[in-house]
Amino acid sequence: MAYDEDTLNKIYDRTNGRCHICGKKLSFINYFQFGRKGAWEVEHSHPRVKGGSDHRNNLYAACISCNRGKGTVTTQTARAWYGRTKAPLSKVKRKEVRQSHAIAGALLGAFVGLFAGPGGALVGAAIGGKIGYDSNPDK
Image 1 (spheres, rainbow, N blue to C red):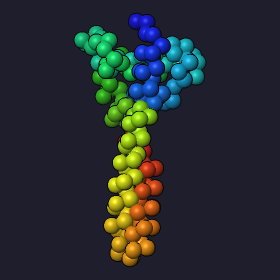
Image 2 (spheres, helix red, strand yellow):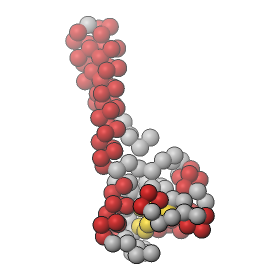
Image 3 (cartoon, rainbow, N blue to C red):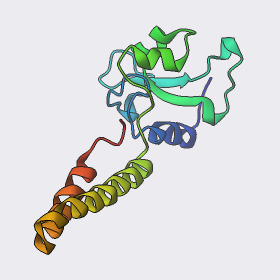
Image 4 (cartoon, helix red, strand yellow):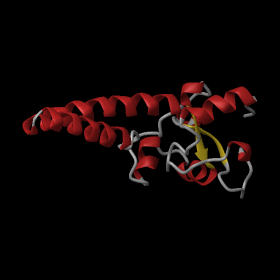
C-alpha cells in the first residue's frame, strides 16, 4: 500500500523514529530503501492476514528485517524476541513520562532527605529528580 508523506511522518513519529519491534533507530529518508542504514517500512501491528486493518492505529514504523521476520505472529511475540514489551514512545509521550518520573523521584528524594534535615531534603529532591528524569521511559 502507498502512503502519503503526512501519513508516513505520523507513523514514523509515533515511535520517535524507532522500530516498534526491536527499538533500533530508523532513518525517515530511507523509507522502503532496502539495504540502506535505518531502512524501514510500515508494519501492521495486527497482521492484515489475521483481520488487521490499514487504520493508522494499527500502523507502526519497523525496520524491514523485523517486519519481514515477524510474519503473521503477534507484535507482542515479535517484541519478546528482543526482550521488549511495548513500542518506543513518541517524543511528546517520552517528555511526559520523563517529567512524571522526575517529579516522583524528586518527591521520593526529598522525603528520604528529610532524615538528614532541610538541606538533605533539597539535595535528595535534586538527586531524585535527576535519577527520575534520566530513567528510560520506554521501560
